[in-house]
Amino acid sequence: MLSKPQIQWAVQQMEKVFPNQTHTELIGSTPFQILVAIMLSAQATDASVNRVLPKLFHDYPDAQAMAAAPESRIQADIHSIGLSKTKAHRLKTMSQQLLDEYQGHVPDNRKDLMSLPGVGRKTANVVLGDAFGIPAFGVDTHITRISKRLPIVPENASVDQVEAALEAALPQTEWIQAHHTMVLFGRNVCKARNPECATCPLLKICATGQKLTQTK
Ligand code: SF4
Image (cartoon, rainbow, N blue to C red; front, side):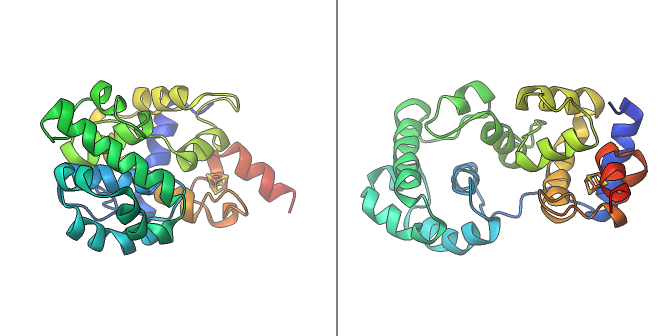
């Protein structure tokens, strides 16, 4: 396992490759819109989600409008990103719950966020960071992969263990930026297939990268 200084160094190197990643690439100007965008981004690219958001937010800018909309209309707006039936249902029921329990506002704590339909711990953490600036480490598939390859955590570590390891190694003030940086690094450098180990700035401390480059 990497030591705490090594983890901090690794994140610094990733931030040199992708500097100033303090915000999501998803469109959204209110906590409600940021939550909707993050929910839609599950199993879809940010670019594909951003293509449907302007019309969706024009039609349904807040929880009240979304809760009142026919599910079929929401589904039509988000059809191109896939899983549109499930996602439309979740958006509508989530919006209704915001109206019923939170006066139409997105709650700014993890427990209440996770009580919403379709909102798991990762989504809740990303919303806390992106909508409210509250430090939280949303761990997705990219962050998990990087953490196991370096490794920061053992191969069988749970998502919660990845989150705990990163939070223990990095100052709270860096969590939001580190989350966005690691997601981009995983998408573009430490990819699931064919990671770019030969040119990766982390190669000298990365166990997986050293193995992969030796076998080539
Ligand atoms: S050396 Fe390879 S496996 Fe290691 S972090 Fe870089 S791209 Fe990922």
